[in-house]
Image 1: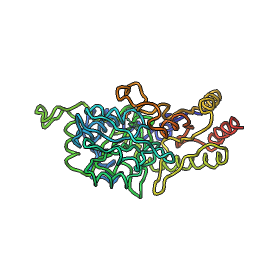
Image 2 (image 1 turned 90 degrees about the horizontal axis):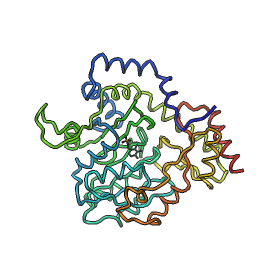
Image 3 (image 1 turned 60 degrees about the horizontal axis):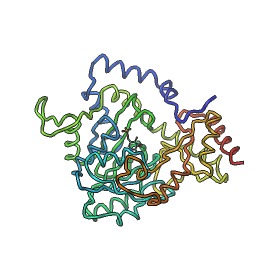
Image 4 (image 1 turned 60 degrees about the vertical axis):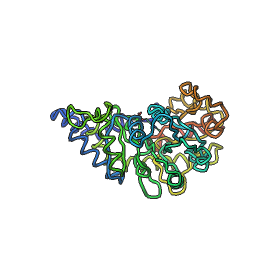
Length: 366
Ligand SMILES: *Cc1c(COP(=O)(O)O)cnc(C)c1O
């Protein structure tokens, strides 16, 4: 039997009645855009993350875009971020007219290395945008300390880390704003696009609420030039039905990662490491392996849905050629991009499936 990278159908089957009931409720009430379903889910999500506010938006990218706008980041500003992420992190910075300034990562966590941030700060720096890559929170304490000293805003890209913890606190609750994606394959996935912004700052929450819905003050009065960045009722209802299962799913992800670690120990691959004080949720189970591209082909030939996150760091993407950042500028991110391999991981996986994947990796490595 093929083993996919993620299995969204297995999750649906496990909670079909709840999802179907949530969908039927929205259709019967015809509450499609914002409305009560969205408000209910926003409150549940804020409580889950331990933040005062949560504002539902149309995607993780849009959450990042609005977070930057609400933090006052604009043309001419610089935002310090990681080159080893999905391109949306940097794209959001570009959307507000600011420039992404990259710093290299820590090769143990794959996250932004806080020790490199200060050297990248200039008079134009306005914010720091760390990413909780693969579901492991960035090292937020030193990042927040630098931000306080230089009076910078911190926007946490927690799109891969719903429910992860850093020193006991939830990912996305640690900076000025946290941004989440409910893209279907994320660890809390909608049946389409969706996102959320969390914050403890009333002004940021208010600004984002306004901007996500055409800058509305009332139905046809607009205080700002806004966007169509709203979360819809169907997605909110589905996500609300899933939220109660999330801790269990995240625990299963952690257990599966542990099983992989035990099976692959001593084979010469670099296993994922949980940073001190972090409780990662393994959105991605990332290895670094020799002869990565050959191994990927080998696994795919066996119908094992391995993948790469991400084969090209952001500074080397054609979309960012205009920044003129040459290859070799961020050697750790580049080395990780050349050697990272993601193995199938989802809560409903069985021990037998994990063993089969691990056996195939070992077979290849001889
Ligand atoms: C998925 C993701 C995004 C974008 O989220 P969308 O909902 O697809 O817009 C941004 N940053 C990271 C790190 C992501 O993984």
